[in-house]
Figure 1 (spheres, rainbow, N blue to C red):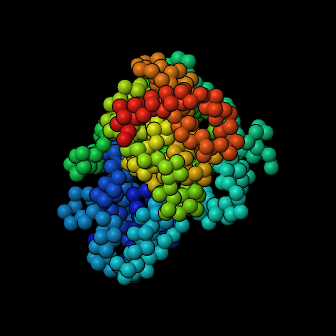
Figure 2 (cartoon, rainbow, N blue to C red; figure 1 turned 60 degrees about the horizontal axis):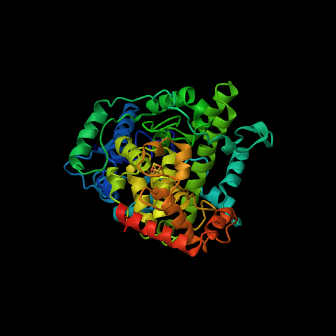
Figure 3 (cartoon, rainbow, N blue to C red; figure 1 turned 120 degrees about the horizontal axis):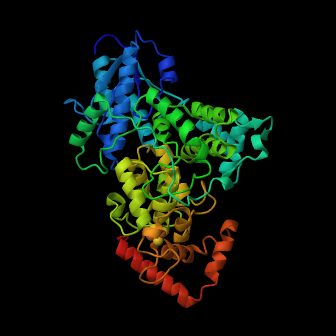
Length: 513
Ligand code: SF4
């Protein structure tokens, strides 16, 4: 690519928003787009082969769409022999070649990348404009304004503010249905195998196939399997995925949001987070589609409100926390957890039926729905005392929608309580009895979820009681933990020792050292 360039517009892999100010404010005749496939971004944590494929294929499709609109695009492919494989070096190389007057980039989704961008001014000797990411409904400054002066950052309070501010499911000042939150109607379990339509499958096109070959060649040891790869990679596909969800799964999404069933990785979940996090979809259009289904009588309120809460509430809240808490958030470890991540998180080879199912699904699809993430793989990591950082890295790299702003607060805060209560006021610890209630996994498992000691004691149940014993003084003043801790107080010293011994043996046997 040659010719004079005024502004070099740097588009990162999770910034595929064709409505971004970066493009609106640009001049196609004088500005150029830069996109880069760099190995660094696929290896700084082990990245599932489908996650890397999704990012790169979506990037190539985005670049092709912009070229078709008349943009000049400098696109560096993974197997380009001159590729330096780091973001900064590629930006410097492009700047040396194109000699732009300045660089423009949208605020990234990761502190690490923002630090790199801040260094571009020096390394390129050019001004660098960092534009706000208008994909989100709440800017980091708006979140900080909301957070200031609050003793606790309570998601429910934020969510209600968002509902009012964006006028979603509102009757004047009151919520539609006179209830803000239908969470209690989102917890049904399945009694028999569900009759749910499989989500729409996108067959890889030639571009995606080429990416799959390049990714397999460059990262032969990447975790996960490359196929079946069925994720939407264009804005058009993402729009169709939204429609597929609203028509076929949204009506039951609310009721069975927390349910799990063997061989059913998707159930009624939307599967929209990869397209949302790449910015192929906007949160507002997802919310509007769900609310429209409610208005037309095609989906009940408990489903639509539950979905809206995820997008307008939780997703925006988590991103707000990420920027509000700053880069040091990643180092928090309030429960002093130091255990190693066991090998079975990578292989799925464990005799715990629930863990084998959840991890097997991640290996096969680079996906797990939220209750798998929170109450199976996350709950185990919490109870076993695995150090937060390797768990956060696992969630970042192994899931097709993994981006730091979302996986870090969800892992450290919601899942591991490592932030000491910023995201959740109490740890989401649960025994095997919860898994038994919400799934059919325990029926096919060698362990007994009711037992906390003994040869067939469920590891979740053993570790749950051990967790409560270990942390009971820490949570003594937490009102939401009071009832649970009373049960531990009833244990005599012998019972406590038996649980602790069983937990130590379980951790050794499972490779948590
Ligand atoms: Fe998981 Fe325990 Fe149930 Fe087995 S018995 S599936 S380990 S919760």
